[in-house]
Structure formats: structure tokens, C-alpha cells
Amino acid sequence: MNIAESGITLWGQDAKRIAPHVSHECLLEALKLELNYLKEDLAANAGDRSDKAFVHNAYAVLTACRILYSASQKALASTECIAGRWKLFQLCGGRLFVAPRRIG
Image (cartoon, rainbow, N blue to C red; front, side, top):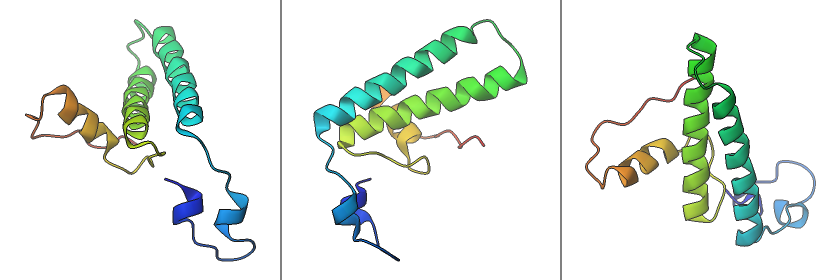
């Protein structure tokens, strides 16, 4: 999502004036940083079989899918988008018919 392109101003300055342009390289660096945070979180939960850890890990995996989708689209994707389904479809070589439901 690019606020400067898709933002609708309800009050105040136009979105194009206040939202800076973010280069693809900058976006990729930010996404890599987020993936590293998720990797650390998942490693910290290794072996934890609690419901809390399960939900957190599931959220982390879906967030990682959203990050990969964002990188491929060269724009941030919202949580509500189909990023998880998209990545599973990619991983399964286009043979996936059942997609996960959003947790939360």
C-alpha cells in the first residue's frame, strides 16, 4: 500500500504532500529487519507447546507471508490481504486449493 497514491485526504494536507516516497531498497531492508525479529521470536518459542506460543507462532508465520508478499509486490500489503494464501500457493507450485483462515 502506498499512502501517497491510495490515500484519501479527509482533513488536512494531501497525502501526496505528507507521505514520503520509499525506495524499493529501503522497503526491502525494513522487511528483512522484520523477518529477523520474527525469526528471533520463533526461536525463543521453540519447544513451547502452550496455546499462547501456538497463536504467536501462527501469527509470526502469517506475518512472514505478508512480508514476502510485500517484497514481491514492491509495496506494503495490509494484514487483511491474501498474502498467506499467496505464499502457500507459491510454495505448493500452484496446486493449493485450501487456504488458511486468518487467526485473530
